[in-house]
Length: 307
Ligand code: NAD
Image (cartoon, rainbow, N blue to C red; front, side, top):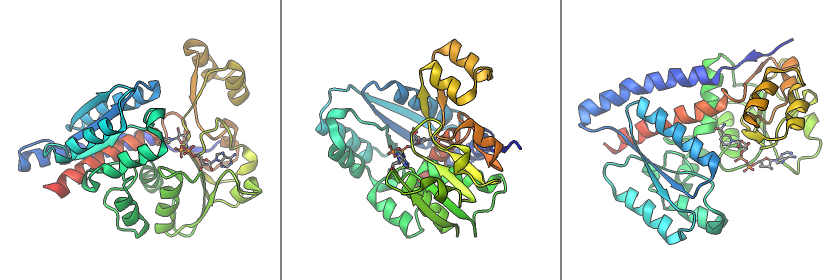
């Protein structure tokens, strides 16, 4: 059996095509374009790529996307000042601080930066105010990755209500909000993490299994109930050929990609899961593009709400 491929890139394209005319409508009634402002601190190579993709998708949808670059050696006060400037800027509807911030800013500093964002402009949905609303099931700005997963399930006809959904990972940006959104859609939800005993058995109970771990190919077929819907949130760079071959097998076309580029982006779900799952998201081309589409949707919603 080979699982149905859940085409996140295709669904994201449809969502972006829905956003674009609404952006044009906003512009014609309000006399300005919605503005997304991205704060990029330091020179993390993956962040540069993520920001470039967000910039491109935003511009295609007709948003104004401004990237504010700060060098890696800035102080926490500098970053906070940049956030406050954007809070006060009337042309700014959405603020995205690209994570991770430089190591020197630290965990507490990072939390201070995210807490400083005006909740009405918090298009990532990470501010405690928006998280509180999310817990109560009345958030306007929901975290982009998990809300993208819900859109994907809805638009590919996979029912959520009444299912047992298992989420592996309990991060603030993916695992926890994912579990909440599935719960709000009447799934029975189990959250698993690094201390969960007998993880495989728990996962084998899932009708919907969401992997948000950050470990290449971690979820193998023995985690998966036959026919389950498997959503792979992981984005992991593999840069040893041996690991790439252990995931795909030596003759797979992705090994030729590896040989060309010297690395591969892979998910948390082992490719062989497609022999057991009923449906599965690819990496790349699954959840990643949806995250960006939902960011555009959130920016439009934030702009409309601000007037
Ligand atoms: P994180 O490191 O904050 O959290 C990882 C979670 O996995 C933790 O809660 C941890 O308990 C759990 N975990 C770690 N090892 C485990 C184990 N052995 N068994 C069970 N659970 C284990 O990561 P995150 O920010 O939630 O991101 C997870 C993955 O999703 C990463 O690969 C990241 O790059 C990717 N990601 C993708 C998108 C997207 O747009 N597709 C967005 C955000 C994150």
